Image (cartoon, rainbow, N blue to C red; front, side, top):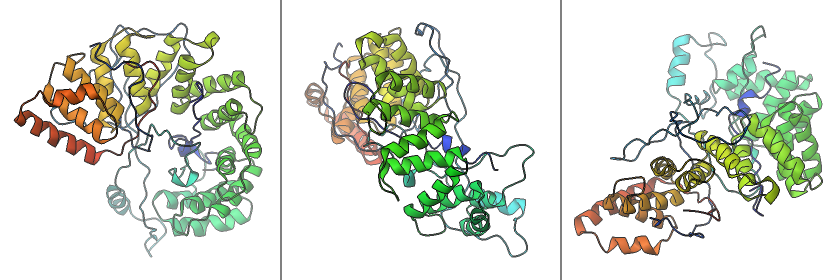
Length: 443
């Protein structure tokens, strides 16, 4: 968290990495302090929603355009959530093409036929975008999807990156190596990616950092971001937050939102940069304007829990809603709480239940607990004791206790309880839980 004494999470989103080396190629809602469980990583799934009238907007909020988010898998027999207001839907992103194993091109020539390419791509499973992960400091670069370039009109095709995109990692390595040794920053960055991710060759963080350093010294701002992340975590190089901040400054000057967000974190903690909450807030706002989902979530938290002179529930709801629409599961839970209680936005229990349902379907046990209460007490959902018991048991299996809801289990008949148990087992087995830290003011 940026404010309230919490941890700061530094993360480079997989979406922005697609731009790498583009230059080259009842009041029953629990009282304050509801129980939570320890945080662990989880995948998140969310779906953009259609606008509805009546949503209050903060006074003169910055313009924001949500990034695409993948569609969730709805729970069986659960009606599709009503569309929250304020944003137009966007198509989910396509996963990068590639295969887990290195593949060489056919002997007849470098490039395969269109039919062969189509067959290769159709065999590649779609990847889901991860979301709310309350983890220490930073997602290690080696766990981040490798960056891919965007084609720029008029530029010569980069065959090394073309091979990389198709999963021909050994071919990409052979094509990029001589160019990298000759000083090509795009090829140097590609070698950094190959060594960082272990595609087609053994994973080697030290060599990856070395190639990123060379590329960043040649002016590649995306390589500067990657090198800064490795310096921040001490991956392949000694940990050096001051030098990491220098690299983030270089990338931030190129308006790379992940770099701006990470730089804000350094100013917030006083590590690698002087302690300066005002500068941290300024950088968070800039990164949020540029669409960084983590910056939007943390900025919303800042407006909720930060110094009294900058607190604004309206602005908090504005940015929390946008992070929620981008698929941030923690933001979905907290925006649902704001929506339910009418804090900074018009109260709407039905829409709040919709957001709880999205986050619950993504495996968040806090959302499961809140959704169980909506069904138990008819707040945003029609009373349905089977679903209430099912979601409650799923949340309990994932570490969220609720004594009041436990009493519900003793009041339902055996058949309903059996169905609820099966429901809970199915969700608990499929979930990879991440518990979002419970805010001080929860429904």
